Structures are given as C-alpha cells and as structure tokens.
Image 1 (cartoon, rainbow, N blue to C red):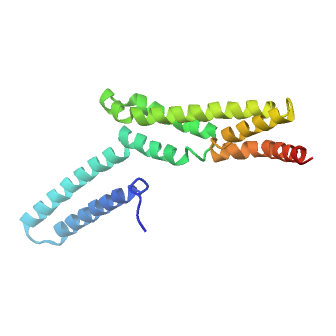
Image 2: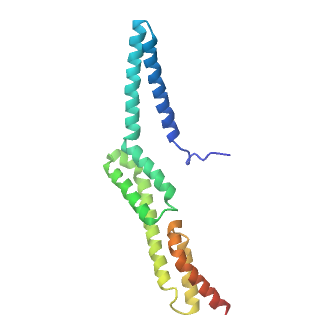
Image 3: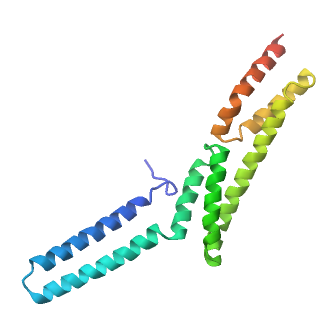
Length: 186
C-alpha cells in the first residue's frame, strides 16, 4: 500500500517534537537533581533552560504563526471542496481570507494562487447552483423535446455540484426524471 504524500498527516511530526522536548526537559531536570557534582548540576540545569526556551519558541511558531494557521485551514478547505455545502465552504473561505489579509506581502505571495483557486471554485459552484435552479424552473416548460434537453443540461450541471448540494436538489430532480421517463415510454 503506497502513501499519498499530499494526504499524509503532518501533525505526527509536531507530536514527536513535543514528546522529545518533554523527555529532554525531564532528563535534564532529573540529571540535575540526581547528580552530586556542582558542574553537572549547572550544566544540566542550563541545558534544561535552553531546551525549555527552544521548545517554547517552537510551540509558539508552530501553533501561533499565521502561516501555519492558514495552511491548516487551506488543507481543511481542500478536503471539503467537493463534499461540503456551499454555505460552509463560503464561511471557511472567508475565515481563510481574513487570515490571508493579515499576512505580510511576502507571505501573501505564497498563498495567493491557492486562495484565488478556492475562490474561483466556490464561484463556479455558486454559478452552477444558480443554473440548476434555473433549469429546475424551466424543466416543465415547452415541448417534450425541450424538456428532455433542459433535463440533460440540468443533469450536467447537477453533477458538478458538491455532494451536499446534490442531496438538496435530488428530491426535486428525481420526480422530473420519472415523469420524463413515463412520457417517453407512452
């Protein structure tokens, strides 16, 4: 079984780093308490403080940094782009965009393409949703051939929607499909 590098969980590296920092702190503290030599006590206590300071910086930059927050939210948005309802996608995009606006110009360059891509994808979903609603309104208008063409166009746009939005329209599309099949067979 191969592992897709795009889908690996990077939190494991953070957990390992935090465990190593914690173990190092405990070892240096125990070494300073157990040792009889004054030099070893001073050395281990200074290493304890250095490890504590470096661990604090690591945790601060990893958990509080705007770029790591935006990366985390972008991966979450990426995983939900084809399944979540549009209202959730829009709210998540707005949260990511607010973080994006707080970045420096140099950092913004790293995220511009991804954020713009998500915006375009959500806009496409919204346009597709409007087209599906329009085709649903026009599904019963016109001759039977026009209704079939409208239904085929409706289904093409319907399949482009996220799965949560498809469920929303399925109850309206299924009766249309059954009615067109009945009229076609008669």
